[in-house]
Length: 434
Image (cartoon, rainbow, N blue to C red; front, side):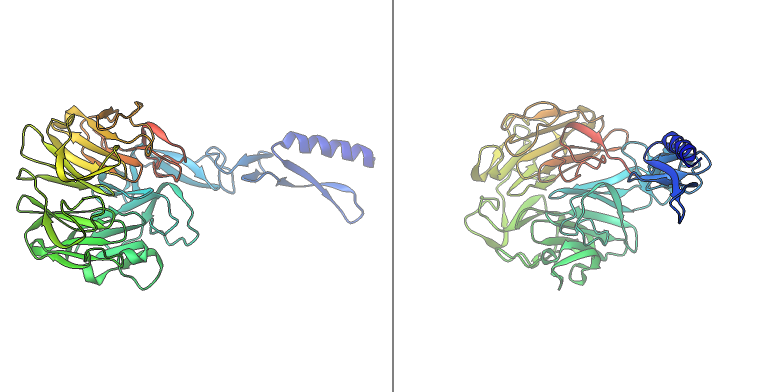
């Protein structure tokens, strides 16, 4: 009889499948039919169905193994860690009202962030080894999909630096997180947003490599950060600035149509010799309408129709420096936005329907747009037109495409492309928000 019971129980266990079994033993070692047990990691028991289901099975989720559903427009129901949730349409971001398009994007060292349209929430993804995602997680685990940063008010400006991030919220308060020496905090790392009183009253923010600058009322620029080559901290511009940008140890501001820069100058990125504590004017054919900085170089859109984009500092792809601004010979078109990374640059052509183009050094950056980069020669990137924003990180780039979706491409080993994976992408992939 015992042998027959064992055989019957073995058949029931096999039928359950997926590492499931119902066999339990009493004090005498006699097998009895018991609760369904699921041995495989990432599975849970569905007693009523007599099976083990995966913890991401949207048809058999939570304790009662019911199908997940959602009434959020444009979203699909999913199961995450055996709890029902929803995932926004590709490129959209989870927000307080359901799913939102992005109003702005920014890219840092190996991470990126986006501000949601309408709600002003900030979501970030990618590397978190220095706490640069601001989610209160000291473990430093990468996040390959967007996670929300808890801030006290809607965001009006955000910037991702090399190893930290900052945001300006309504009312002008500035909050930063990540490597604390970049914004003069008393701690080594800050894992959740911390208010930076020295930068308060801001209208825009720029996080760089080891420092942070804020654009304040009246066009004043105030900077903070422990790494201080050439006198980065303080108020280098008293008034009149309309835009700011930061690189790796240097900063620039757009003042009355001219570009003024200060800080580190090891690659000629100040258009002068030696570090400069006070702003030095870059010799550009003005007026300048758009300013962007990479790690060690700057680029600007000028009024010169023969050379509308000029750059200075480290010459991308050539490993040489040039303090005197030079024309990008193959970028002889009007642009609506510029972005600079460590060894690549990108532009939104104007009109916006003309698309996105990037250029750079293939030795330092993955192939862009499915085509191997040629030094200095722009490559068209397959971003749906008309794109409205672009941001470049260390070796990755993100844009808001013509449908309002966030797409990223380039290096993805830290999850900085936001699509749930940790792989490089030669063509743009949509951020996945769940």
